[in-house]
Image 1 (cartoon, rainbow over the protein chains, first blue to last red):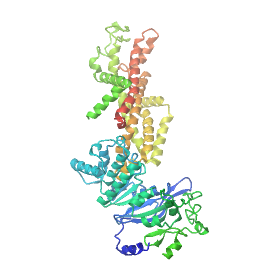
Image 2: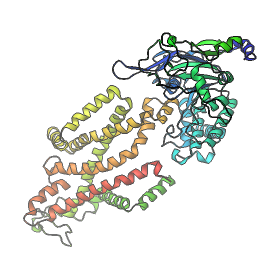
Image 3: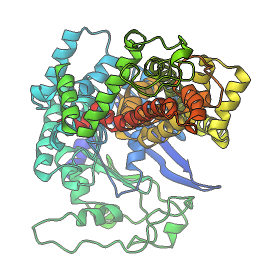
Image 4: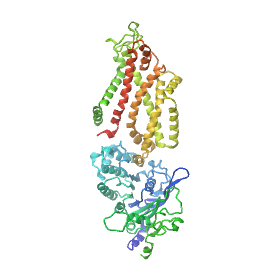
Amino acid sequence: MTQLQPHFANALPHLPPPLLRVENLCKVFPVGKAAQLHAVDQVSFQIQPGESLGLVGESGCGKSTLIRLITRLLDVTSGEIYFDDALLSTTAARQFPRSQHRASLQLVFQDPTDSLNPRFSAYDTIADPIRRLSPQQDKQQLQARVAELADWVGLPQDLLSRFPHQLSGGQKARVGIARAIALNPKLLVLDEPTSALDVSVQAVILHLLADLKQRLGMSYLFVSHDLNVIRLLCDRVLVMYLGKIVESGPVDQIFSHPQHPYTEALISAIPSFESKPHPIALTGEPRSPINPAPQVCRLYGRCPRGEDRCQQVMPELQAIAPNHQVACHFPVSAAADSRD
Amino acid sequence: MTTTLKHTRYVIGENLITFAAFALFLALALMAILGPAIAPYSPLTTNSAIALQSPSLAHWFGTDQLGRDVLSRVMVATRLDLGIAVLAVALSFVVGSFLGTCAGYFGGWTDRIISRCIDTLMAFPLFVLAMGLVAALGNSIENIIYATAMINLPLYTRVIRSEVLVRRSAGFVEAARLTGNGDWRIMAYHLFPNVLPVMMVHVSLNMGWAILNAAGLSFIGLGVQPPTAEWGIMVAEGATYIVSGEWWLALFPGAVLMLAVFCFNLLGDGLRDLIDPRMRT
């Protein structure tokens, strides 16, 4: 950390304007009478051009809602989304397919089978975004472009005429990726792109994604359960718990010195062959995201460090090192940090 | 194109019942197109000298009370009966698809209004509703078509609504939105084609029912009027002669009517196999 700090201090003033800036984003779903599910609560973060940002969190913590808000498939309840300095959150999700920013903001889906239209051949699936959002192209240009995309994602040309049910899981994943990069997006959001695949195919797809990022210079927002994947591919990580970001920072720092008790427990649970202390068990029931008490920390009740203050004042995200923020009153190595 | 042909041959060859249904359908279609041209006698010319003759080599299906050839009348009637059924089914399919897709896709108030209107239609006994419509609008072929289409509308709207509803939140619909498709384009090009194979079974089953319905309306004296050759009227007229032993008057048009309904019911499965790309191997 002593090495990292001066580096970041120098880098900060020269940062280019962020590609994506999310400010106090909230999404509330009504559930029954007077009950509201706070799926995404006051989330703020930025993505720099060319950066890979990881997003981790357990099932139901609002990851999917957050990326659907960012990719403009869902309307926001409050807060702002700026992309390329344009305010996107005021455009209704229903109007967004016609927006000039639609092409630059794409998503790779979690389930490659569910996300491909069963009646579209691989060619039609990949050509659809080009037909819809590219300026007028003749048939030959379109064919050449689809062939090029298939080449980039490693999909054999003779599979282009096949329907999804005639393709393997890995091939379907490649079709999904080819469709998402067809319009040269600036930000590609990946919603657990490998979770539905075999381990052997996972590795291949992850390599492909790393290669494509280099080739096309996109930014990634990479959502995953798999912390090792995040460590491999991302520059920075956001840790989400029940709709809130509890910690954010560079990958190395988060993995070697997690500050939030939740992150610490998460990282201690990564399976490994090396001998290491037992994973930290988070006992107790998770708090409900329905009408949550605004002053109580979302982890309170499961947190091994929880004290009275945690149910009186909601901890805010605070920088404990340049670029490293944590939302906790009692961060893991607060004492160690001050010595550092 | 060649793959489609190959696939058609495969589907028909693979299943004997489908093959029989397609053959029967082809025969009915030919009869509808060529009926008046190949009928051995005129369906309308009366000749009291040969009234009520039983089936013979000259008159395979016998003759009726006015001496008209029953075979010729059955053949000529095919065009009218199938025409009414096809037009009625097409009309309710188009309108029902539109309403059902809108209700399923948009949900909310659109769904509530459409579904309640359809429920109101369903509340009537359907054949009685059709009778009422024809009686109110007037005895004409168009009105039989409208009435038959109207009473079939709930089936199409409801089935398509539920099929669209389960697919509305599928990944490929979200993906279509991401790739720049607006609501109408998603409904027309992404959702509706996926619902089509399921609908083909219903269209075919419904076709048989529409034929029965049109014949039923004529049977009770609404819709098509004598002396026009029509299966329902022929059965109605022949029914009075069954007791006196002239069974051929009602039996033959009734049997052809039954075969037509039978054919469309069996055709459904074959059509689904033809249209669903997942069945192509």
